[in-house]
Image 1 (spheres, rainbow, N blue to C red):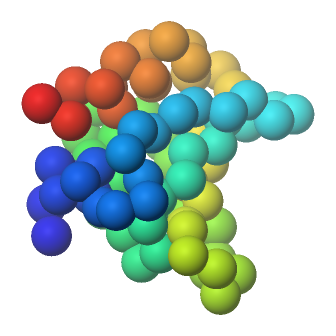
Image 2 (cartoon, rainbow, N blue to C red; image 1 turned 180 degrees about the vertical axis):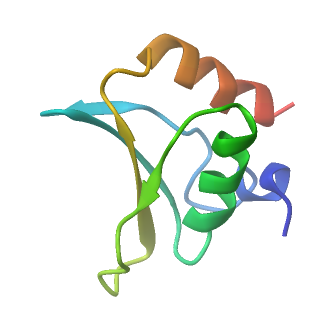
Image 3 (cartoon, rainbow, N blue to C red; image 1 turned 30 degrees about the vertical axis):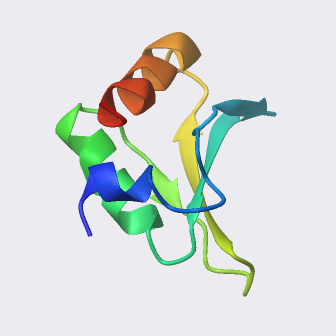
Length: 80
């Protein structure tokens, strides 16, 4: 599955950046968080994937120091 296919996953039509405490959070389909982490790394953004909680989503965490608008722009670009 490519990063573009992640965005076509039923149930996740749009990625959104949520800011919680000292980090930004992005949800991905279960098992696909690592692919997003690698994609963000290509844009020089450090991210971590939270261990799966058994739910239908992975949680990708990005330090709050990263501009949330720039992060959202990268996520929006992937959908094209």
